[in-house]
Image 1: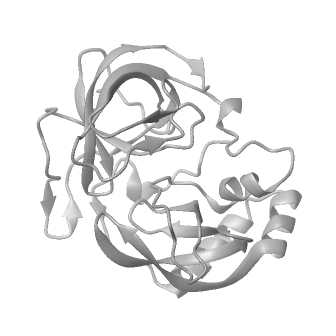
Image 2 (image 1 turned 45 degrees about the horizontal axis):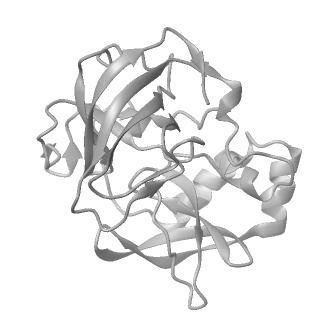
Length: 241
């Protein structure tokens, strides 16, 4: 399935404030209503009372809300991108990897269910574009999961040279479009360029009309610009992956 359409992160100007434990509990309650029996059983096995855990995010030590844990891995609520993500967790409770996916809880739990893929997005037909992308050389780390749909940032159509998000106060005023990397190299290092396939994951709720050959864009993780690219071609409708 496609990660749940989260209106505040798609089609609308975005605002941000740190998530509270109480707010995440409400998200869990809502998401569990959409989960199947296996996903609910997995959450009963691995779910924990939500708590704040430290994470190094874009060079700053901040907190995210952990909702489930299995051995040395945790599922946490990423409040910048507004989705559940998985990460190794240290012995002292630190989240060791920052991801920017907008997964609902059901999708995040799939990785802990035997026989399921980490994502189930391959079952859904959506448009796919081919693009040439470059990661900024100043990034502290590369990006991986570029062939499996695990990496799901946003793109903003505009000049490739842009390096600062446009906002009014605490509201981002640009049009953020959710995409999923489903083809290309499995990983890219800072400064590298590659040909990739991007699934337009919120189609048809979002038509992505401006995502067409020749359009340039920047790659966003929340307010951070991590790369740029140009659309080379677009299929009318193709299966993800």
